Image 1: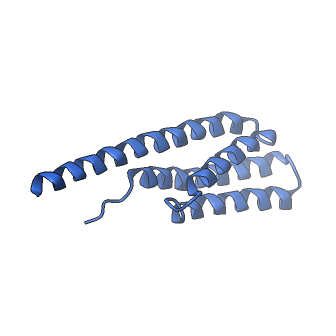
Image 2 (image 1 turned 90 degrees about the vertical axis):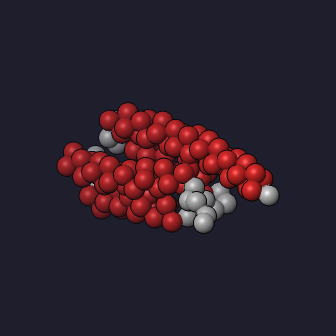
Length: 121
């Protein structure tokens, strides 16, 4: 039985939650009229869509780099909605934690499985 990557699981959960936060930030930006309506909707919906689709590719080559890029884009939304600097910063910290903790757990699990397999033989 193959175990799922904890790094991928944590990253996927974070991206899914973040897509909703970005959607609500888009509604705030629209209500504050920080830009014309179609621009706000295009940027907000596109970013929300990218965030909700990213878990499908996590674990593939360069996918975690793509996740870091999206985190920076979320922070950049602070240009229009200043509170997004804070919220985006929180998500960057959560993303970093998910990548570090998930990677550590995955390595520990692999070492434990190797040890169990060597003891069986």
